[in-house]
Length: 260
Image (cartoon, rainbow, N blue to C red):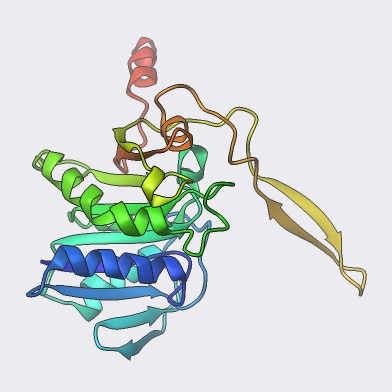
């Protein structure tokens, strides 16, 4: 198996090393793992592409490249510049430092990389490690993802239906905020929404009097509706959420038929 790996935390991120180990296990002794990741952190860029500017590609070692661009840029570079006609069998993005459950999915560069792979008609998965009081101070806070990642990916691949046209599926996988031994299992779950939790902005004045702002996140331990991704994550389960790049609300579309 040939696997292309990327992330949004940058080429030097610990979670990327974890994902490379997972990918190596999946690829097997005769497989290949190619890493094409952002040269600098790209958290929160979503599915952004550098359409108006070129992106520098640097070869750091065998099958290892850094791109001065977004995760989606990295996937495009991997597929069309670096690998060429050696198309990968699977694209993996992550392991993100922090969860991409619920509303976080809409901002995630990790998901952006997986989405771009799906738009390029390739199977893809985004992997993220939820942090919380039970795991953030562990020697390896990515322990749950590292221990269970390969098994979760194999099970998800085996359960994924054959692609039959249209927007291809990609999967959003979130590992719970617990130690590896405390993971209870795997749950297929829809995307949730944390109540009264959203990003906000905070102003700061620099020493020279100029105005700046920092983006602030919300409480990640807030419970969601039962059986959604956040709910199962906080209950100790790995969540797998199938997604597509099609953002159409089919129920609302049907309601709009009255306009015709």
